[in-house]
Length: 204
Length: 204
Image 1 (cartoon, rainbow over the protein chains, first blue to last red):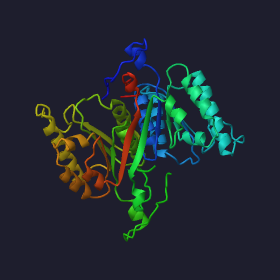
Image 2: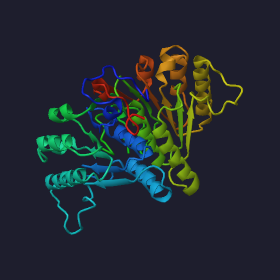
Image 3: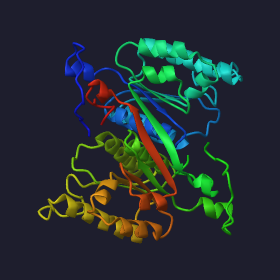
């Protein structure tokens, strides 16, 4: 329901409004489809609510999620032109983070991932966006490229009202503990199991 | 991966291209978040691929998914103005299906749901859209308002290359059998469990 009724009301001294306005940390994990797709769907809602969006994709290929990128950045352009919705920034590791100068590109993936996180940490401290998507961010955590404890501490202590959605398989337990909302996507059936390859408009 | 490699290649006499181009029937079910959100995220991808979109929401309230509705219809408007992406139509039961004349409004939900399905059936036969979202469509099936066998038969026999995504809890087994892609969203943790109500930009 759009405005659901909570099952329990905690004795935390907060009003309903204060409690409602707490920033959300969401994690989409599991082996199924829809983790990133649901995060970008949430970004559409955020856009409509006037929350400025920052997407950070921790992926190798610039081709990943190009459909969602094109659609969301088109919505961002609409905002710039008409004031409708909110601003949208889309950054991806694959092509070298956009804030890093060319010629200065780090080719090591671990170092690139860490540079991405350091920039996000800086932006969280500066409250640069209202709604962050850290897409496929669980992998650099899993591989030890970025320190999970530091991420959890940073997210727990983030100032203001910044929503964060993190996607990827095998989310670390400490991250799920810190999250307000954890959804697991489970694969039951997939066209690739029947020997069908991905197709434009459906898979990317 | 955007272009994944199938685990098995079936002996069905089809080329990879023929197999790839088969229309997809996807079902998002389970008690977790993200079923509809992921469907609307897929619609963004479809929009970018130039697939015309028809959304049919089997919901009572006109407030449901207003964020996604505003964002996707903004993308549809962008298409009408610039040719970018694809056309978007958004219909919902709550406010009376838009193709039904005012004054003629059916107030019985079962009859409204059935009228919605009959219109979708007509559109599938006429190949009116490339990408359909039947949001919360499992409920009228579950409640027996619409005949599941008829839906499955219609979807299996739909002409051309029309993709269909169906969302909602408790998808009937016959529908899941017919689907190419079934994803179950499982709730692990939700802010409402901690007594927090939904907030704009996050929940709707």
